[in-house]
Image 1 (cartoon, chains in turn brown, orange):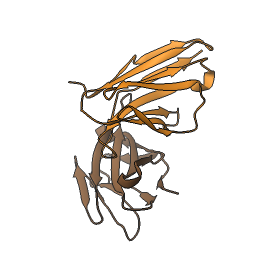
Image 2: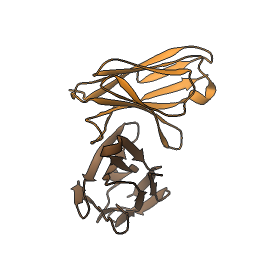
Image 3: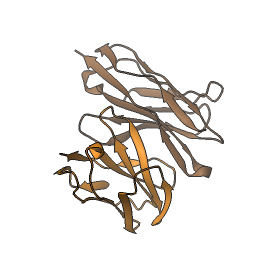
Length: 112
Length: 111
């Protein structure tokens, strides 16, 4: 069935370190892919998205590229800040099937 | 302007009580959702409504009943609350299956 798998956390990094959070998906059809971020005590908010293969989503220094050949949408940031500490969710939507799937979330802790 | 709002933000109640959580969106979206987030941050979809019609009804106890009086509102009523219902409940909305916009959450604590 359709699903999203992302790396388990927590991920702990020092400020200015490079971040990668892996996300792979299984889907019938042609999904759109999303990264959401949840800061402590808040709801989820969209970080970036890509709607077709080879598209790159980017926002606030974060990037992810829609890779159809490896069914992946890994999140990267070149230099993390303490303020990036949050839980990150990978997600996919299947327009034709009216479905939306979230991964299990990856907690990121950035230390000064 | 708040795009998706929920009330109340916190709800503390005794086992066996009945409670409701309200959600409103002012984005003009046609689809609204209820999610339950547990203490490990796992997000589980409960219900989805499209134009006031129920389209997703995941395996949740029938003590949970959603009601959508119009496209902009989706309320969640919970009967006979149990300890295991303690969680954060999020409402969200989207235009079909495009980006979902989430409310701030309602933290439910059942004592």
